[in-house]
Image 1 (cartoon, rainbow, N blue to C red):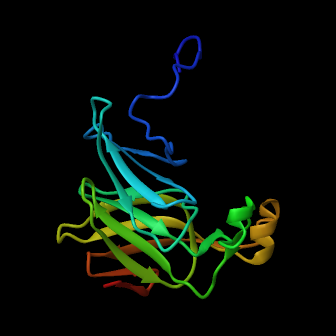
Image 2: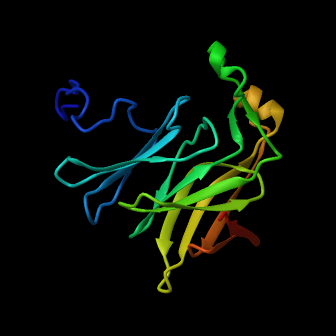
Image 3: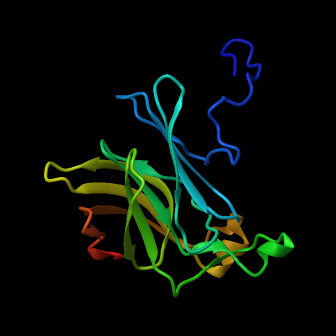
Length: 192
């Protein structure tokens, strides 16, 4: 967008066919832009990095068990943090073009930690919740990561009528390394 006239310049040449997520992240120190996108078709999630010269330098598929609807991500100096939350569209309705989200309490929340230009994701599991927005992330001196995020435990009323927002909300601090993570006093176990 032109800063004076507000005329659109169009899509950047690096944008993948599937576009980008709602909240790409800019590292002000390196000029890198990290993003993800998701789809109802495989691969269900992709992660990418655009360097400071506006060039797509990294773009990899991230394996998920099915279509998901992640909204945000976080990053540290060396890692990107993605999520696979149990709030997603009903799989049986997608082929009919119906995108009805449901909260699947029987499934864990999973956080995926991937090197900023890596291709292997370390997944960590915790009690079911939905992470809407990440607040901050950083690495401790011992190589562990700490992340703060906005957490929601949706109920069916919240899922079906977002304007009423009756789900409980709080903030959590997630800390750990690529083996075990801790959030709000709960241990997040790495998935083998």
